[in-house]
Length: 189
Picture (cartoon, rainbow, N blue to C red):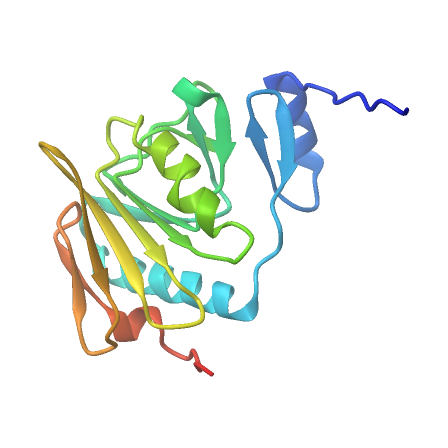
C-alpha cells in the first residue's frame, strides 16, 4: 500500500506561490487548490457584468472589481477569487496586502459545471461570514438563468430570473441589472 502525504502550506507560503503562479489558486486553510480555467461564455458573461457595472457605477461610491483580486475570508481562512465583486466605497485591504480585500457588498459568480455546487453551498456559506456582504448573484452559462440571494433581517431571500426581457433589482447597490446585459453576445444551443 502506498500512502500519500498531503502538504499543508502556511498563508505566507501560499501568498509567495500565488505571486509567481501562472494560474490562480484558492487557499483553503492550508491547502492550495488550483482554479480551473473558464470558457468563452464564462469570460463573456463576467466581462458583460463588469462592463455594465463600471458604466453604471461611474461617479458613485460603488466600485466593481474583476476576478484578479483575491477575497480573504478570515473566519474560514480562505482566499478566493469571485468573478465580480462590488464595494460600497473603498475596498478594505487585508492588512498591508495589496492583493487581498475583505469587504465586498455584492458578489457575482458565473457558474461552471465543476464549481456550481461549491459556489452555491460551501462558498456561499463562507461569504455569509463577511459583515459587508449582502447580495449574491449566481449566473448560469448555458441558459438564461440567474439566482439572486439578498440578505434580509430573517435570513437570505432567493429570487430567480429566466427571461432576457427582465431586469434584476440589486438592492445592495441600488440599480437594475438587465438580463439582456448579462447575456449580451451569448448564443444558447
